[in-house]
Every structure is written in C-alpha cells, then in structure tokens.
Image (tube, rainbow, N blue to C red; front, side):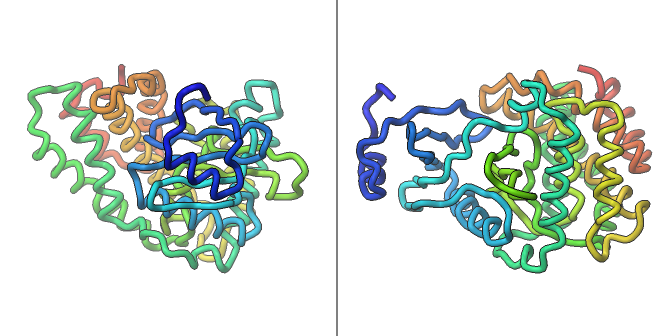
Length: 328
C-alpha cells in the first residue's frame, strides 16, 4: 500500500503486534466497508467507519458462528471506536472464484446447504442478540422497490400511494411466515460470501463472510439467497436437488415439503423485489451502476417467484401500475 497509512490504523496495527505489516487493499463491494490484507500474515484489516451497528454485528456473529462449530473469520482484535478489526484471512477461494475455475458446482452447493442445516439444527444458534426479522421490516424492504424501482418506469408516479397499496397486498402473505421455524439468518448467503477452506473437515470447510446484518427470521431465507442468486444462474436441476437435500433434513417445526416450499417461494418473491429496488438505489444514489447488469436476472426471478408463491394479486397490481416492469 503506497498511500500514507492513517495514524489510527498504524496505532491499531501496532497494538496488535503488526506494526510492520504490508497492507494490500481488496476490491470493494456494495458497502462502505473495506478490507486490507496483511501480506503473508494470514490476517485481514477490516475498516468500517460508517456503520457502528454493522461492525458490532460482524464481531459478535463471527464469534457466535465459530462457537457453533462453523467457520467464520477469527477476530484477533477489534476497536469499535475507530471501526477497525483484525480478522482471520480466509484467502481468495470464494465460491465465485472456485466456480470460475471449474470446481464442481453441485459439491460446493451441497457443502453450503449442509452448513445451513448445521446452523438450523443447532439449539444455541438463536441465542444471540440480533434484531428480529419481523413483518414490519419485511414490508419496509419492499418499500425500497416502490421508492427506487417504480419511479424509473413511471417518473410521475405517486410513490406514497403506490407504496401503500403495494404493502397492503403483501401484508397477509408475509404475516403467514410467522408459523415457520425462526432461525439465525445471515442475510447474504451466496457465492461471493462463501469460501472453500483447506485443512478443515465437514461443514467447517465452508467459510462464511458478510453476516453482520444477521437477524432471527424465517429459516428458508438463506436458502433462497443461495439457490436464487441475483448474480448467477445455477445449472439446470441444481436448485431442485439442493431443495430436496435441505427438505430431507429440515429442522423441527418446518412442516412438510409443501410448507417449506411455500415459505421459500414467498421469501424469494420478497427478496427479489427488494433487490430490484436496491440495485436501482445503488446506481442512482450511490454511483454504483455496475449492479444493474444483474437486474434483468433479478426481475425474471421475481416474476417466477411471484407465480410460484401464488401472489397473483401482486403480479396483477404491478402489470397494471408498471406495465412492462419485468423488462429492462
């Protein structure tokens, strides 16, 4: 790293015994967080100065997941005042990198599903102080679509009226999720945030990243994140095979296959709708238009999930209020 290192970073590294480390910045993502690799040390500097709650959540959930027998980065040291943490470096073998190199897709996804099942079966998994992913939050996330996606199609739209009607159509279906199992939900459980780790056995081979927004919510949410990925298409038949794998060993209280699939498709519809709005917000507000290259896939997924979840009233509303909404 050629630029001068800020004084607080130098002081933090010195306190951790890493004053002489060479820092190598890693590419950024949709967040304001950044990571710098300590070359040759097996450690990473995480810098998150804009989201104290997310910083605290990362540290807390990382330690919790490790206690559950899963692989989250070890926290070597953390300073909430500066938003700096020294964490274990899992390397660069994300699922995305491995898949691009020809790694067997079904094997990687099966490992991720087994890690989820381990999390969902562990009796201590929900014993962590994180927010509840409840109905109001689910509806608020849908408002991102109203506020950021709908106006791109109809600039003159009455956003408040659209949003009120839109939320009303989702209210009862989403309220029905309360009957399913509640588990620790990591929120961004997809190939960019999963690693294949050498030298570990069982579910610990699956390295977990980017879970600072974890909540207690519907068990199937992370399964949707994994199997209906906004960034890539799965091989034909793989989603169904992984669903069957999960259903065969689902946690207590999940009900039968129809119950699990009903929640899965409903959560998929909600998630894709939110993401369509988020991608537009990233482009229009945050100056990150690169995510728009995934938008057509997300809209296809959203349309399919609305149908699979039986949300015909939502689809009819969108077709009436936003003609051609599924085309970009």
